[in-house]
Length: 544
Image (cartoon, rainbow, N blue to C red):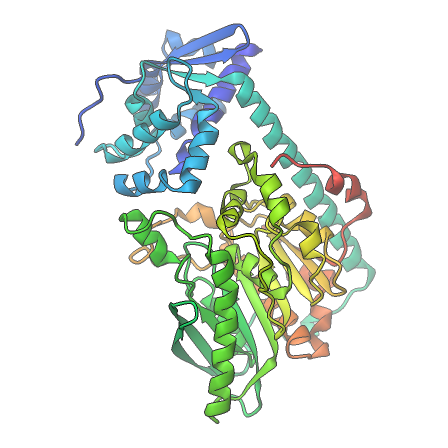
């Protein structure tokens, strides 16, 4: 049983390296991998793994493990060993010198150690960069070959502890998702509405629209940025919605929502946040920036929206062709933009909680916590980020647990929709959306659950010619087009109800409606309160 668990954990620990990202071979390179558990130790040669990965042959060294492992696990290991990740070595090097990259290396270095049992942080960084520069590219097999030590040691005790933590999170998340799905189904069956007789909000509305690109220069912050502005052709003042993109993203990734809302009569402004956008990531990868974001972005992003609204008010007063209702503004944000939306809605940064949660971030498996902890570099003061013109907010896959916590989120008193994806590995559903939803005290609150959705499913896939990440298609989930249709419909229903004050759209904000439009391959659920049977789970502390 120990052999079986050792090999399984070895495969898992090694595979963790993959998503983290014609030279001569190093003089010193790993020859064997040792897996230690208390007084026991087992080893396997890197040659045996290479022979299996490249030729499919299981030699005597590997057979001792393969005999205790299911064939599908062995086949998965083979794929993991030779899967190539196309990343430039300079980009890999730059990333692993950022605070987030170093945090990730620290976590892996607790498990993967050098021959002398020292933390493998620097050895891992060197191996990853050199493997990326090799003509065969960044594969796990290459990382092993470039590891600058005669052997690699994997701490099975620590691996199993982390595996238990991950299993705890996964099991609790699955329990919460199943409970929410059951409650949504029960609510939908209690009162059936025939939505086939009502307008289909997934389809475009009746308004045409024009697009402008505004250049904004906030001299007080010495910050210049642009915003796309979608203006519907209408004779009456248009309600305004602002959309905030996520980290390393840009104003195009949610443009489909902007055009859809504009077709329903909303004036939609989409600013580009210059300190945390795609261009910032490009500068990081070519060495012109040291991080993908600056801590000041936690302040500048909400201020970008406030200054944009100020500018729109000035344009509305100066130019009679602008007809805007800036007394009722909605905001939509995804990921870091979800944080932005919550801050504008009235949640202040909770520095004491953030300090507490970030003290143990080396052991963090919630990737979004690495970004949230960046805010600790800010001067600790009471930042006033709320904008009173914001009357309703949608936060899609937001990071919120530690940066805000219960004390701050309970201060939001406007209608709020939180959108969560079941397969989000960046801002996990349970810790970053479901538990924070339980802390809300505002009267009109909605939790939308996208089953089968990932952190990126609600985004348009970027143009590979302009986006340096070139993310693989599977990262967007199995059915991103379907999820975007859900988001089109729900964003119209929410903003019509609470920004444009059209009560006729309220029936769409129900479990009945999400059941009516849901498809079984990737259902969408909606609840306004969490099931009572989740209380103990929500109160239990999750591994950070």
